Length: 92
Image (cartoon, rainbow, N blue to C red; front, top):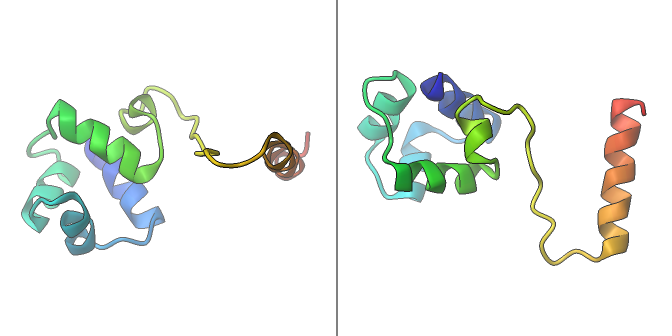
C-alpha cells in the first residue's frame, strides 16, 4: 500500500524516480524498492516523504485520503478564497 502511494504521488507530481531520489538524497534504487514494497522507508524518511508531497503521513500510509494544502504566508482572506474555489470545484 505505501509503495503504491509513493508511486502515485510521485507520478502526480511529475517526478521521475531519479529526480525524486536526488531531491531526497537517496538512490533511484531506494525509490524503486519503496515503490515495489521491497523495503520500507524509515520513520524519518516517511516524514520527509510526507513533506515532499505536501500530504500527511496518514495520507501517505493510506489511512486518510484527505490531502492538505500549505497555506503558510497567505492572509486569512486568501485562505477564504481558496476554500471557496475548492467548494466550487466540489459543487458544494
